[in-house]
Image (cartoon, rainbow, N blue to C red; front, side, top):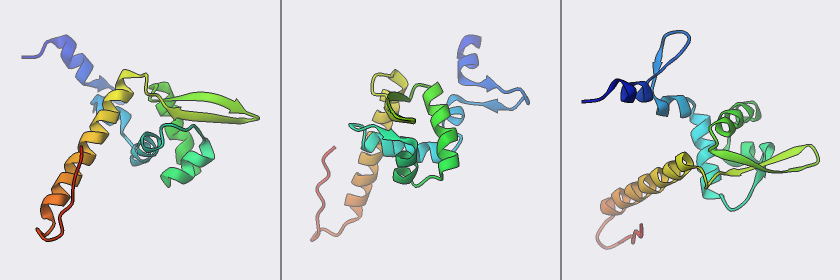
Length: 129
């Protein structure tokens, strides 16, 4: 049983009357997930838009759109400005970003475990998660 308030949190009505869940709203683009993965893997550093584009293998135009969305949702944050270049980093202080990070780690561990189980017994793989 869900209350009306929970239903309002789960689904967001768009202007064109299409219903979207919060994951669809955040991950509506494969480019966003590629950028999130790049910034999670290399979260100890900050990057400008061009570096994010190159490192995540996403076109610069799509990177600009994704950065705007990720910054609005506070998944990434601007860390500093060098000349005209803004540098960004994965926001490890944001609760949503922490959950996404944990989901990423769990999915990676599950994938590694499945791959290890498929290996031949004479060629073992050690998975530490």
